[in-house]
Image 1: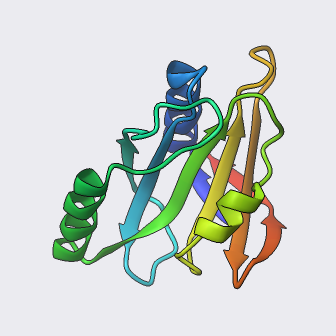
Image 2: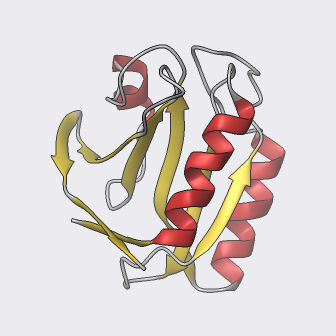
Length: 135
């Protein structure tokens, strides 16, 4: 189960809506071994695409080094889907390289509703998990 605070949940949704019609992406870092997302880090979608996202390699390197220096890991890796449901695509699955991360997807296909889902992706296997939002 992904346990996330309301402020971080809201920040992820706001980033997804702000970048629409392009996919938004980013990470939420947390202390290594804690499984607690604490530091929201919105990133630039280097593709600037409504159907695909890619972290900018220089930005990713900087952020991953910063996480290493702070003894953090990417607890949540998130992105949005702009025209489809919040479920990992085949491309999302093939690029999932952090087996301990929670992969969060937010669908912005319908601006009137909020679809926020979390998955574990390891060795090509997708498992949806519950999301608990704390105040």
